[in-house]
Length: 116
Length: 113
Image 1 (cartoon, rainbow over the protein chains, first blue to last red):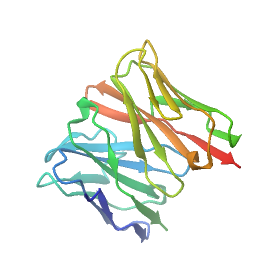
Image 2: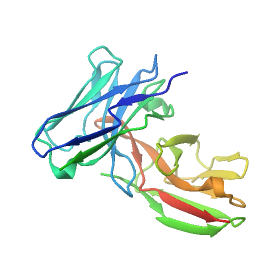
Image 3: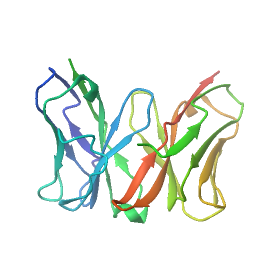
């Protein structure tokens, strides 16, 4: 079946601009996660949703970052006033069960964001 | 920030040699998961360990979870070029914010024929 889909695959934007990154999880998966990965680093947790609500947004670096999942399926990560330090690969993952169950994460291919 | 430490950062072996990566947490983990990321790819789930002292095998890969549930290891016997990639451990931690899966920085494995 279809995996986690992320669009766009690449995004180049100028410093100060607003960007939206989209994630389509595996159908029926309850939990959805956003991670950020810089070169040579492991995925850094940003936020996760259980259904429509953000269950844990403690990883969002500051108030320029915001994510929504209005219907409990597709999610959008929004970054305002982008900075060069925001450049990274943004990974989305979904899992069949809630985070506390330890259900494995299925990752998308990521969106590579470059802020110039 | 990342609360799970992983060593070594890099490992270069000759094909046929063994390889081990170690993962340590300062706090007790609910469980630990291992992922593999090929160059240019995304992390792919390998296995989950839940019980104290648990050992699981997948062909040439052996995964262990420490008795105190604070450390884990992945051992690959007789590496092959197809084993190339970065191996991440991810610890499930419970905090006031809920459950979070925290990844280590990974161990990048290079295998030369």
